[in-house]
Length: 396
Image (cartoon, rainbow, N blue to C red; front, side, top):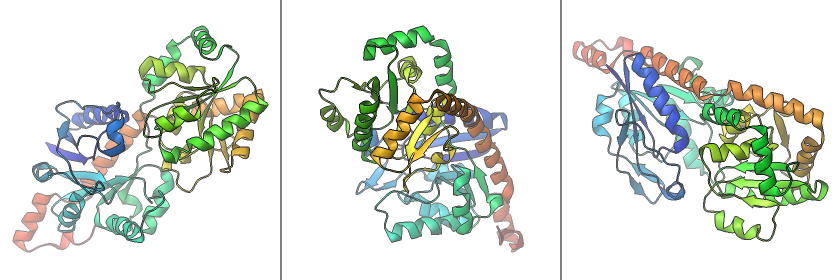
């Protein structure tokens, strides 16, 4: 049986359905998938959404962190057994240096999975250079979205060695739960929360971290409230900024911090909401917004993850300058113009049916099969090495 190993520093709850579904899809192709991951580290250790994978899929390994930034995971045996190793396109994985050497020697197929150019602030020139060089050391690239393909090709990754994953979360369950929640139930929940079933709700769901621009969101919300007295802001999630947030909204009953919610509890807030608000970096929450049929309102930032490509200004949401006044005005316009709201909702629903976990699984599965077929196996390499005939292995 062909074996594929995916290496993750840690596996968050939102990835659980993806790996489970991919494991099942590959099994039907007689391909065994193992996902190697370690206990959550740093800010991720504070979250409660970390998940365990099925025993026949997981390989939990102890992580050794260097200065809290570099990770070494002793995966020698699993790497040796694998026909294809898929690892993150991040400099923190110390094992990647060994994997790139194995790839260069044609002893192992090695693929990168990532978001292309790293856009977070504070990246050093050396870090950027290493990320670019790693692109030339791998056999394949699983790209989050179409939008990062030009960057990959600019740095030597040919089109035939790129799989566009169309990164997504599992919104099928969210859509099912939303369907089961009646309008009457949502109206009653809104009345209980805000005092009026006709209140208009802006909703944020995600990690409470600095790059989500929570102070910006609150300032914008205050401006919206001045023009729409029935506006309420609901914030769901957890993270290191929680204490600051709770202090910042104290005494403001129209701003509701509800903590972390899951399943039907979470879906009920999506059902109550009118718009989804992402004032800071917009990543996979874009998919959740569209999965719920909610127009997304975001701001222009150079640090957005690739999933922001799914947002089409004026079609399924709004993209404004990163200015509280402009952002607030866009929110007000969407909330107070029924025709605009209707058009954006229809666009969000259409995007939600396109960017799905099912599509991501099929894209990833096809990419794995194409990568495995791209060149000869390690055993064939050894045979050619012994015979002295390496002609077929000198070119990718």
